[in-house]
Image 1 (cartoon, one colour):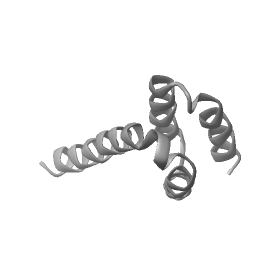
Image 2 (cartoon, one colour):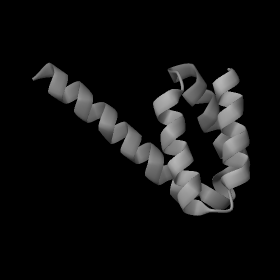
Image 3 (cartoon, one colour):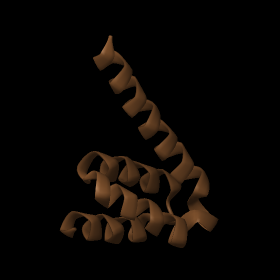
Image 4 (tube, helix red, strand yellow):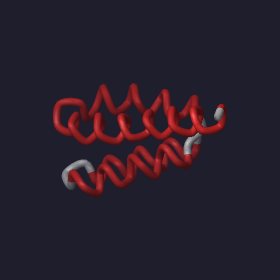
Amino acid sequence: MEMLEQQKNVIRNLSGDKELFKKELYKSLAWLEKKEIEELVEWLKSNYWGTNSKEIITVFRAYIIKKVDTFYYQKN
């Protein structure tokens, strides 16, 4: 949980800069465990959906596509 709290602090400080916000979300997804990502999603929805929803959707869409691609290519 320590990494999650650290990432929340960084994201909080970058929320005004949309590009840096996205970059930090990508980093968070790479570093955090599944449970922490789930908590991050809820925290983002509660705190930044109104101001950064486009960036959140973009990052998580890319994350999901990457996971699906990885699963697909491992199967074939």
